Every structure is written in C-alpha cells, then in structure tokens.
Image (cartoon, rainbow, N blue to C red; front, side):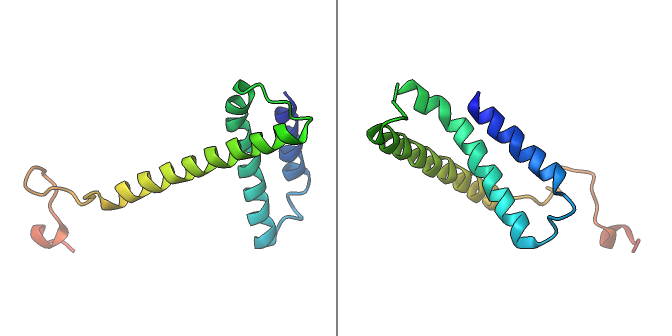
Length: 108
C-alpha cells in the first residue's frame, strides 16, 4: 500500500510540473525514477514472501540483495528477448504471399 502512495505522488508530480519538465535530462531522470519505483513494486511480492524485517539493517541488506538479483534477472531476460527479436527474419516471405514489391508490378 505504501508503494502505491509513492507511485501516486510521482504521477501527481508529473501532472503538476508538466510544463516545467522540458529539459531532456529531467525527463530521463523522471523515467528512471518511475522505472525504479515500478520495479520495486514488482519485486515487493518476492521480498514480502521472505518475511524480512525492513526496519533492521540486516533485513534491508537481504532485501536489497533480493531486489538487485531480481532486477538483474529481469534485465537479462529483456536482453534475451531483444536479441531473439533482432535475429528473427522480419521480411515477408514472397514465395508464400501475394505481396509484390513495386519493382515487380511496374508501379513506382
């Protein structure tokens, strides 16, 4: 519930200060901040399952390790998906389709 409040505050901040957020670096920092909070929301369930006491230093250390491990795995999976998408053949198969490039139809 606390994370939801933080996200709502971030969204309200974006709405209120929309006109003042015109610089590219500010936009990039805000996107990174939003990504950070969203990733915390997704990893919160995993951290909650461990029954960690986030009020103690030891619990925060363990939760940080879980979070960065989760984040590393998520980014690694995104890299694999992106690599596989790049390796795919995206051009149409002209032997099995009715698509004809304009050079074959005589039109330009």
